[in-house]
Amino acid sequence: MENGAVYNETTEPEAKRPCRSPLGCTLQHLQGWRLPVKGAQAMLSFVAVICEEIVEECIRCGGLYFFEFTSCSAFFLSLLILCVYCTDVYETLGKDKVEKL
Image (cartoon, rainbow, N blue to C red):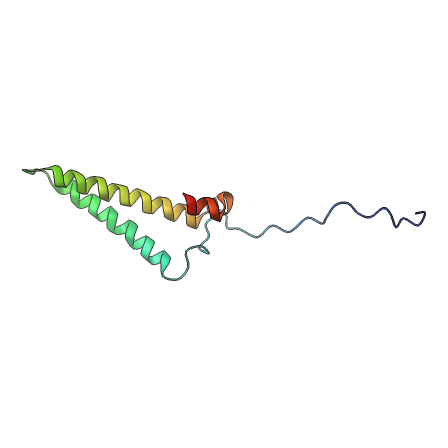
């Protein structure tokens, strides 16, 4: 005990943090065909919203209102998916919570 064998270092060396981009954008979770598909989904749903807004008059507007609701919902949900998978939110929440969401 006098030679100091009992007293070992109690702290571990600090791990080096991975280098991240300034805005926290990463594409590692949407690789291959998934990123272009999600981008196309967001663009097409946005085009659907724009096309719906062009209609000025309609006789039976129920279908148009349903189309407006679904296209807006698809646009915002696809943007949410892109934001979650392409930013640090995925690492912050964790894979299991993102899958539940």
